[in-house]
Image (cartoon, rainbow, N blue to C red; front, side, top):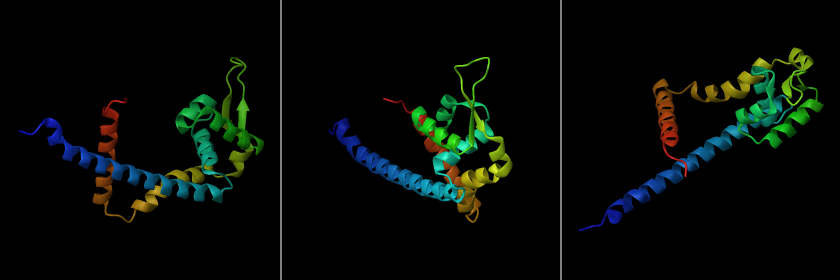
Length: 162
């Protein structure tokens, strides 16, 4: 009689191979998106992280550095460096509210807003990169991709972190 470990061994190997393939695909997607985000940002004279900060501050003016770093999923020190550079370029403004001197609110400089079409930047940076890729695909295939990504996301959310 076979022990339980011996029965599950082929399943473990298959799961390991599938996991490796999923990781490989995710890395490939990340690399491609990073490249496309960098190309888009370069058109406007920014890095991808800088343009991400601009887009977030445009959508959420008055956000704090802590909140912004959470939204971008970057460390506070990384976002602080990006904000420093954008501030020196006159793109980002830091405001210290009178009612809470320990808080710094971030927003886009009015001159920058008036002289740049941030909405178009946002659309190209976020929406067009993906929509351009899927617009000529069969809608049913796109729905399958969406469904698969949603299922995978739920699977990961429901598994315990160790």
